[in-house]
Length: 324
Ligand SMILES: [Mn+2]
Image (cartoon, rainbow, N blue to C red; front, side, top):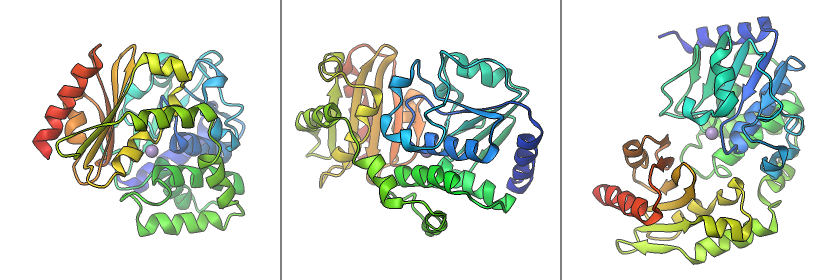
């Protein structure tokens, strides 16, 4: 095992010596993967591109378009295989890279993984993974700190967005004194923190709110209300013309109910039933481990290879009962 310090040196060196660099975000991109990618591109400059794993620009979560460079990011239809360094940010496993993203990553001469998922086993040449940090953005801040490079306003915007969204506005238990300290440093870089919060949280499509309210009012409960869940069928998705970003936050709402220990959101997809889990005190990865998923103690996910959503639900509840 090489030390973090050695890794930091090697990463900074690879960034300097590589000619073409591709920064890759995870599928269903969120504020952390996009914020980290944006900040890293701001740092590297011209010779780096960002790949967001969608077929077309209309599928980016629109609220994050305020981030520098996200508007000009590549997608599956216009990315070329011409990079000598590929950097995955916030991508917990190589399975979170699909289509040509994975091919380009595997073909690159050098590969770096920058992440904070405890379940990340490391699939790059350099695996800069810090499982105790709140967000990939916090990990990237550590790298910049080592370089003793001044954080520009552009870089700060991305890093702050990643930290804000992955800590649920500094509410989750991944928020440490160090997180606040970094947030304070970033706030000193001339960014407008209240405006960033508005972009992330007060800028949602109308249909998203209607869709989420529908799902919350159709939530069901088990085990004396310790388990809460809601089911997203293909029918509901088409009724509200819901994109992936529409489901963000529903599971947190269910978990926020008094007495609920664990919340599930199940969604029908072509690959099977996609599951999000949020918990209060239980280790959610103990459930997702059974289905080849991953994540964090209080926020995890997996895809159950079944067609029937109710069948998948019963499997999950059975696992949850063993923990409760
Ligand atoms: Mn993250």
